[in-house]
Amino acid sequence: MLRRVLFACLLPFVFLTGCASLPPGHVADERDPWERYNRVMFSFNEGVDKAVLKPVAQTYKANIPEVIRDRVSNFFGNLSDLASVVHHTLQAEPRSALESTGRFVVNSTVGLLGLFDPATSIGLSRTNEDAGLTLGRWGVGHGPYVMLPLLGPSSLRDALGTAADMQMDLTGEILNPDTTQRVALNSLRVVDVRTRLLELEKGVDLISFDRYVSVRSAYFGRRERLLEQGEAQ
Image (cartoon, rainbow, N blue to C red; front, side, top):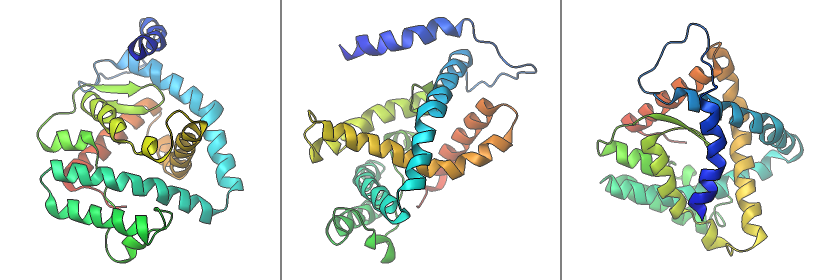
């Protein structure tokens, strides 16, 4: 059933791909063989963001005190620490796995279910790890660049990783997956992420006259940095 719904949602974009035009002076990028489709999906995502996500994030930032926004970010960050434990283990990094475990335990207890972040103050830094990075560290290449509906830029490898990480999400363990509370919690997570991107996105607008190319370059650049050295927040 889910596959049918996804197919029905993506089918219009497949047809629009044939109508998509490339900008004057376009230079093909071998990492992006599906560029026509990706540009259509990019425009769709930009439209949704402009009409819904960005205004909601701006309203959230303007009306919710920073101290509360920080608690929300810490809560979701604490859930991601548990995923990092799994991925550090799969990457054969026992020391990092122990540090991420320590973060999760400290922040889940002393930090009141992750609302506060005492782990950072004792030297346990947060690392961003996901299934895509795990595959990459075991030698799996990016594969073709792909723009995912609503989720944004990715690669074939990272898209598969995202699907795997969704199965590890703890939201369903916190709240009954059949309740509206889970929908509200996931919505709050999206707003939190979009709010934190408000400042970061300003630089993207200045990189290039072609925002699509800027986003693609920024995506690959960030993923390569994470693969080479990891990233602490």
